[in-house]
Length: 275
Image 1 (tube, rainbow, N blue to C red):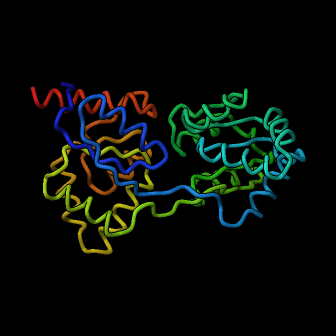
Image 2 (spheres, helix red, strand yellow; image 1 turned 90 degrees about the horizontal axis):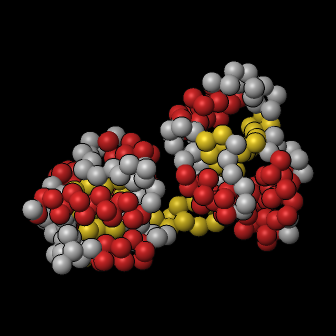
Image 3 (cartoon, one colour; image 1 turned 45 degrees about the vertical axis):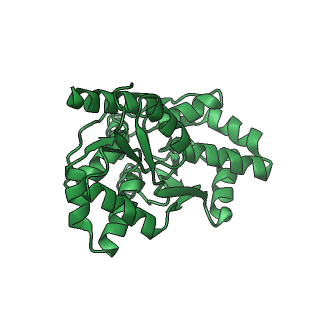
């Protein structure tokens, strides 16, 4: 018997849902699958193609990568456009700035690495790291790969005020992965105490859950349900999204962004509670 035997863990994850469920099952848990958000290519490929063409043509001096998903989708788009080699060469020349280990990992898959990694994997972490460099950005052409279609005005405004010429790109968008009725069933399960833990891996999952709860007048039931289960969050952006809604977080694994660490932290917390 594993430390999570008989425990039900809700999984809003989409992209790595099967892997996360398997890891939990190895610890004895019962995964409750409810993928909340799907990740799709940007519906209009034109702006992505224009941004990639600018990069490939030497039009960007610095590239800020906010997510690994974004870089992978940019490279897939470059492949479809027949400019993969040119984009890769341009990335090799440009200064690459990353927010967190996921975009750094995506760079490593290309045989590259970050030139500047934000010490804190948040937008503010990037701003602080760049601000410490003084006026280096003045006159520089900076490409920013966005998180979904969030415009990230704080980062863009900082760059523009620092004298940079900014070009943003949104290579993917979020869409509902489960219909509202299924999300409502997850809220009911939380409120009824049929779930022992829930593991959030992106802020978009939190947004989607609250969107459905708000539409159904179930926000208080959702808060009450989350208040009686172990809430696990991976990464500071997810933590911020939950704390902004008054949710108490029970598990935030150190050196997060690794699913196994998240599962181990949940097993330790719930296994200890059982003991």
